[in-house]
Image (cartoon, rainbow, N blue to C red; front, side):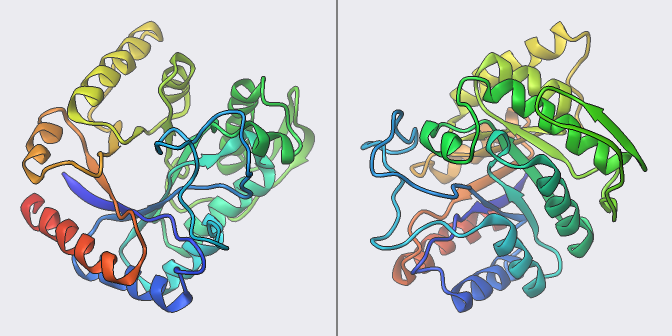
Length: 289
């Protein structure tokens, strides 16, 4: 089992030097990957609360915000040579699918195939609407956008006539280094997310899931594969961010479930806390080796 780190970088703590040093340290200690979450704008009031916090708010520093995933991964790629980079998750239904296809395949090209495209439909109604889309149909729009991207990545010339996207004889180059295309890792827990993982996914990503929660989700995922007349194979990756409180000896339980990668949450980016947390994560890397 491989060990990665979830480190959504936030200003003002995540300076260029901090990010560069963190990436090099992660690579030097044998971490598999760095994953980042995505939010382009935040709101003082939300219809639905952030699911991973007690007060429903994303814990950002005062006066700070989340750095853009694409730009940050490009910056990190220039400072490293082996680390993989994963979006955890890219909010596909509020993005422009053609621009997104271009950004992700360019990252894949420049990193020589070190990108995982983790995707989800999102929880922030206000953010989806601020980006110009409707909240209620985000699932269907996600599926159409993924189909657009997949075809642009794999076909020399594409005609597309969907509900939200229409074009003729479009060419997108360069194509991704990874074949058949950049791996799509589907996040989410609804039945629609399970179906999306079966249809588009090279893997499934679960956030803040303990072994019991992973076992439950794998049962639902396998049921979705069976409904589609398929069986989940060993090449379909299971990627999990465990709870912050996960004891080291829980690694064995995740491994027994067939988890391919544990992406451990860095949590605070204050320098005095990063060192302590990275020491814990580096211990996991040694145990997993």
